[in-house]
Length: 219
Image (cartoon, rainbow, N blue to C red; front, top):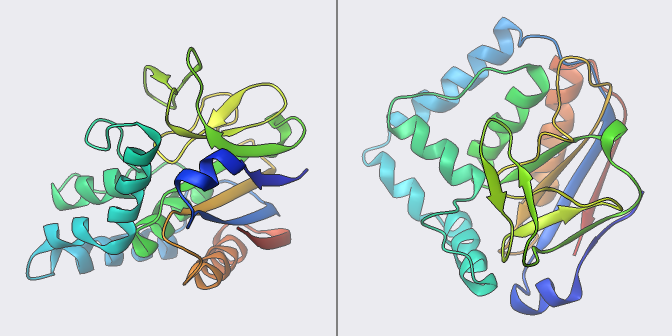
């Protein structure tokens, strides 16, 4: 499987870089140690003098700017990191799904970057990161059908299956998933991506029994 960035998307969002991690995993309920990491991260945000200021960080602003460049309203279609941060700031906390999904959410709010997560058993052929086309939709996880036109999307040989806003039910990770692909999406360049791919790999090893872990930066 190859993962590439479409030239047309790159033309409109020239600083787009992807950091991907693939691994064999187990996805049980999160351990007390992982739940403690999630709680500590949330509490650190809430302890800030002005928690909402994090919503104006360079990473969040770069995601909003990319959506605008592609013709999508970032107030209606938020990047996943911003959506998670808004949950935390509102006191709703992060959802608890399984160890793999919880790790993705933790790294997303730490890095302030959206992360796609896919069950590789349901991904077919190569993946391209491109802008959604007119008429393209999919059912988001726990959501309605998303209008993908103008939204940055991951598309395999079948159809789009993920985006920085919400991934699809087709490739969602459940407790039965054995091999995953996680993609950290930066619209502001590659600075820090190595750190976050290594952070995720370590969490997968510590809390999801990861093996055969590979990482790569794609620009």
